[in-house]
Length: 232
Length: 169
Image 1: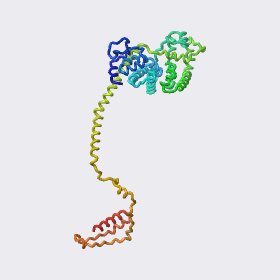
Image 2: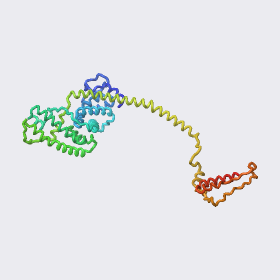
Image 3: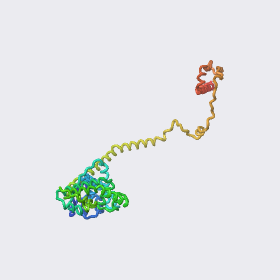
Image 4: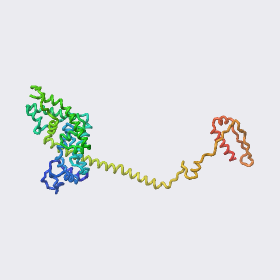
């Protein structure tokens, strides 16, 4: 990281940038405030010393990065810390990004590696701190079941289901968990996951198959007994 | 609570659970705190990095640079003085003649002497030609014979000394 970036970043706040601000400072004459700017353009601006452009990248990817880390750790506080570390690392090493892959692939790779390191370091310290569920987004079979419950019981059921699901995910090995999270929750393709994890698409498919079978086994008994117990 | 024992006809699939997982999202307040904390972390890392660079620079200037300068000066001194030095003694042969001499097998053989049989009478020396000595008689103490019997090296060294004495006188 060059000194220019350091100096300018020191005066930068991570408040969502104003797209109409052309008042001067480090952003003078630049259109990098635009939220629609492509990643490559923003990265070039960051490399050139305009640290504010990094804000846009943070705002663009923070939820996805957080989601990956959170679903790998099942702990929102840990995910918060790790996600921040991911962006700090990305900012410090952005000059190493050559553009050979998509920026988010590069960022995801940092996120996955940082999360794996964190999990390995804290292997013995494992407790859940779960994120809030947004019930509006729930659809399908679960929404159907929930709609038939009273409000209080619905919350309990959702919380329990959430805990069981996270518990089952934590039983998977790190590489299987990562693959499931990236594919099933983040919606990445096999190819993208292969690039992030540096393995072949066949390996990704194999890991997915195995991990889903394992999850199915872990959850099977609970899904039978647990939901029956809450039927009214 | 009523407990309905009827099994569900359409059980929840794994995909439904993943869909539920996607709905675990932090609220806006979380992101506001996240931004503040991230800003602090980034500034902190920059300060740390600056401190690290400063410390490295100071360490280089204070420790490594003087040492390297002193080392360079010493090395230059050694190099400049080295032609003046000649080895006083060397175990290695310096010339081809010496090498050849060392590589040849030794012709000298130590002959064993039976000192019981040997005549150890006193050696008569003609001192007429040596006016500074009135008389000199070299004798070997008979008690040394016991030593010679057991220690050939003493015998050989003694015979060598005797030979030297003969050459001298």
